[in-house]
Image 1 (cartoon, rainbow, N blue to C red):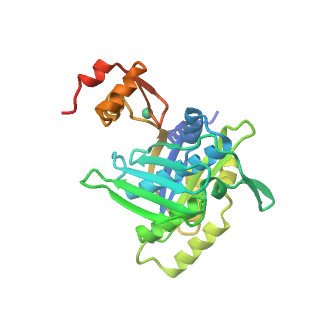
Image 2 (tube, helix red, strand yellow):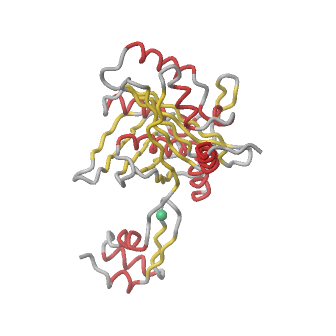
Length: 313
Ligand SMILES: [Zn+2]
């Protein structure tokens, strides 16, 4: 057996560590003002599917929104609890889709109609989910940035496709004035479970050369769907490097991603304190109050005494 150098061993260990995990990488071309974010969120989306018992159509729609929210964390500080909320309100049967993610790579979300039926279409000779039919192509996309510095920033843009990736690209261009390309994919297996979920965000910043913009546009156009790349074994860093080929790609960041809900008893109880006295009386007529977390399905039960003895400060 050939003795490996420590450096190689560490790289190998890291590779194994990230084999089944979700994470996001950030890469830049050397000397050009552009950024590429690529995220793998297969486990996070599969967790969402199980938590909410999502139909295949709902899995794909919420999955895309969860990946979208993770890509939106490009707008918040890395490794902080600054947060981005993404709300999609289309005229499709799924109703409102809600996803949020923070600078630490924690993501969660829910949809109004978790059992939405599945619409498909044939594109490039393959059967695909028709996400714009599930989401609706008319409506709004809202992004709220909670930077923990006073009032959150809210922007609303109209939906342009209902496919979510294009809608996010439109948001970045309109509200953030950052020319962006977004690709998101969620692949559901025969049994309904999530096989692959991920996406990329390519952004060009001021002062970039036309040559590089043209090259990036071509790369993005020619890039196979993310889930196809993942199926072939591509990792986020491979996809980032493929997008930045010939531009001396540098990996400048990496963060783990997971489906995580920080709800607890206090948060659950505080939602009851928003009710009026009459409404509370009505709730307690049927026994203890039950609060179900919309993000993770956890159930919290409170007796009348527990709620009423703890008044708002
Ligand atoms: Zn929860």
